[in-house]
Length: 410
Image (tube, rainbow, N blue to C red; front, side):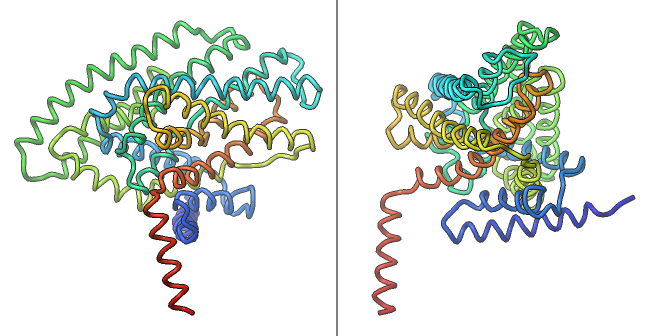
């Protein structure tokens, strides 16, 4: 048995914390430092660490716990109020990036600037590049909003609701496009499973909420058993979502958090998971995103494609979601906050790309640009969120304190 995993964990924990503190010095969210730690230690830079099955499984557990705590801290009543708005936000957040990605890929293909898989029509490949841009990695946004203390804000709840729906719409888009390349994919079955998952979650959620509420209301001692019961529910819903319904496990984890969020022991349970997440699971998850990045050799035209695709990926999410936000009555600032919160593609885009490549929808040479998009959007999303949530009075106080310190130094 090898104990090298202990060294891997030690390097991940210390590097994510050190770089997190460095980025904090530059007024950036600490999650940016954690992401950079994975990039620096991984194959893209120093090549010290590689993604192993152990790190992969721990990182998956990390994102599940992260989304579970997001559900615990979410305002259920605000989520209900923003239900219709979240759907519109998600719809525009899928359609506009889909159109943008398709247009960029189509134009590059039109002028023969990209490699083409002759077994698949160019039009289909261009549509698939648009599908990749529809992805949203809400985990990065959740961690940033928690750090900023804005997870339960009006914009924060809208982002959470829209991101969950975005995942569902993304699954539908991916299923539709892959069904053209893979005859074994049945769109009707996929849609039925998604609907079945929400019916299942509603029934299980209602029963578990009643049982947990009554149990926690009567018992005042041995509160640690509540944490075990809550975590069990989280893991079971996550498992059922992926295994039986083909829905992302983080959706099941988020719903489990929502179920517990209206019970008496919500804050006690959240505090225990916060410790687990902060000390081990979250650093591993964010570092693992960087460890996935292996940049292949790219030609000048593919580098140009990667740059333009990254810009389009950022702008289409911001424009699409901000426009939808204004339509649904959010302020200009809230609309921009929502748009910034939906920018990150993270590991979701990599998963979509790998599934498309497996059925011939994307040449392997285009994996490089996708990785560039993932890195750029994942790092810039927390920065954009920090800027969009910055209070004017906070900026004025900061400038005033700088002027005072300079005058004292003089």
